[in-house]
Image (cartoon, rainbow, N blue to C red; front, side, top):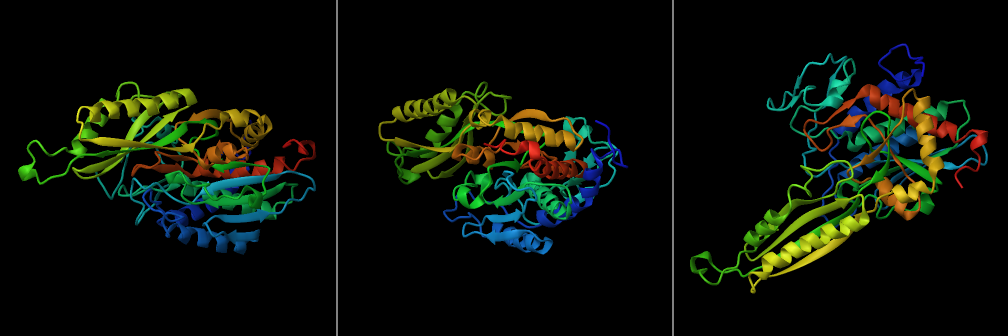
Amino acid sequence: MARSATDSRFASALAEELAEGVLERFLRYVVIDTQSDPDSTSYPSTAKQLDLSRLLVDELRAIGLSEVELTEYGYVLATVPGTVPGTPTVGLIAHVDTAPGTSGTNVEPIVHRDWQGQPIRLPGDASQLLDPADMPGLAQKVGHDLVTTDGTTLLGADDKAGVAIIVTAAEYLLADERPRATLRVGFTVDEEVGKGTDHFDLGAFGADFAYTFDGSGLGEVEVETFSAYQLVLTITGVGVHPGSGKGRLVNALKLLARVIEGLPGERLSPETTEERQGFVHPERMTGGSSRATLWLIARDHDDAALEEHVELVRSIAAEVVGREPRASFTLEVNEQYRNMRPALDRHPEVVEAADEAIRRAGIEPVRSITRGGTDGARLTEKGLPTPNLFTGGQNYHSVCEWASVQDMAAAAATAVELVRLWGEPDRLGRSG
């Protein structure tokens, strides 16, 4: 596709026009600590997520969106009115929280303008190096403006890049004279702990379908996710003073360690699997010698294989604990989300529109799967078809996370094109 931008680093003239707005917002958003907490019983799981939610409410009102609200559960909702009667309502969604596993406190973003391909040593921790020789995605971005951290925290592109993309697109659409569909904006909380849509009211949102901007590489359209369980394995042993423990002490921590050791590392580990291959992954462990709990996640694109992963953990635990009759265990199985592919296959027009919008933004779409989950997976399961689109962020959940300004701008242009194309007369009724 011919590129009309004056700067050839940008996918289109529209992307170039949106770039500085996306970057300015992104830099403001990432310094707000919004980590979610998997152990919390509140919703949202951390009050600090609302710091960004409240800021977004003020910002959306200031730029002129209508029906702006902060719901009782921390969701931010807003509307860009359409200009063509009878067109479907399009939802654009991103999440405000960041991953709990890496610090999001005191984020110091650094913009590397016109990066020329040299390794980037992060100044806050000299051991952290972004080396294009080891990062193929980075090597493709020579000439781009890159945003990194100082190496001591994550950046938060997952998913504050998505938030900046949607807000920038919404502001542009309000001033745009071309026909457009009605846009509903939604910003969720607690996506990173698997609870982003627990209280999301589809009726109140009012979209016919939606798109999450929570992906990564340029042009990606993610239509397939893992199906996912969280497993909570608790082993109860016998706790006594170690000084008098002979013949009496049954150490629950040691039993849990044997369960972990019993997991098949070669074929069911995230370190050794790719594409559609599933895994069982121990995430964290708490407790003491008398009682200890292990949290694991089980993932697979095939639902039958996922059930086999659960039974594997159960059988390993039964074997380990069975060798010690004084010990016992429980295994709690919690569904987190389901593969969205079967449901999206029933709405091909929604995915095809994403492909077309990306092409209009000057990029070739790339159909891909994600080895994880998104709010879109849960929303699709609930009845709102929601594929996931790219943001330009990379190395998520890491102190070596980075984002391309040019790719974020291309995503913002894609968001604009999506709302425009669903406002075209020949698309009336296509969402049915």
